[in-house]
Image (cartoon, rainbow, N blue to C red; front, side, top):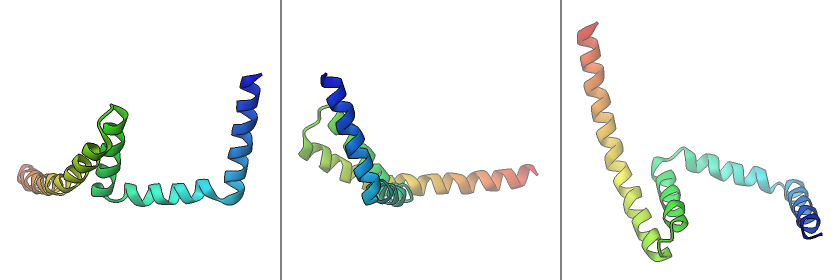
Length: 92
């Protein structure tokens, strides 16, 4: 009987959410976050650290640090890409 109640509650919640446009709004925010490497790094790091049991304050601070570091890692990747392109032009 408990499973039936949970199933009905999920159905009502999902239907109400779609009626109010909540999934589309969530998808819009997620799409914006996925376009920014710093934002995506912050949220993925925060989620992963919280999931493994890291205290919330530590997780938030480490997530901010990793988001900042992702910018510099991105710079390294761009630099490596330029080296690759130069080498590829020499091979051609």
